[in-house]
Length: 159
Image (cartoon, rainbow, N blue to C red; front, top):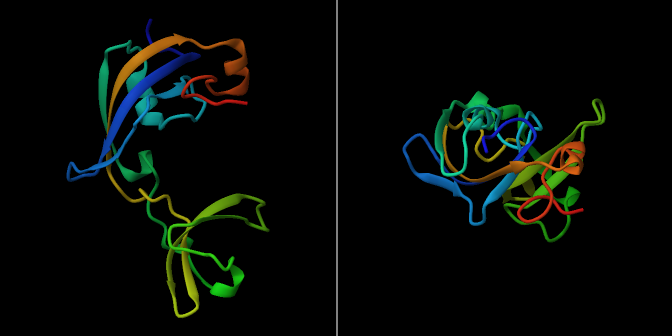
């Protein structure tokens, strides 16, 4: 079966930086619902269209196709008292923009002299990424999966 809209796709992947260093690799197969459901990077989804189990793809993406350009305006310094007492570098916090009601995630980058530096950029923002994947399985998605916009079950989403 070929990958088309509303198929559940299982794959293994490895992501590399511009120098060829591995920056991420799955340990369990990932499963996503194919067909513009925002479950996988769009450029990867395009490359996987029409592929079948056993096929491989390699997609190199500029930052704007992958995890976005680095945005210095998303780095903020805040007083340590605004955070929980057990704050540590690497912790993630979610905040809501009062003007737009948009939710954003920030990662703690540094804690120094009572100041916490947080970064709202994706950790891979600004990087050119190569995404290599091998298709393990393709099946027709269930009506429920299509209605929910994601795959259920093993390696998928559980309700």
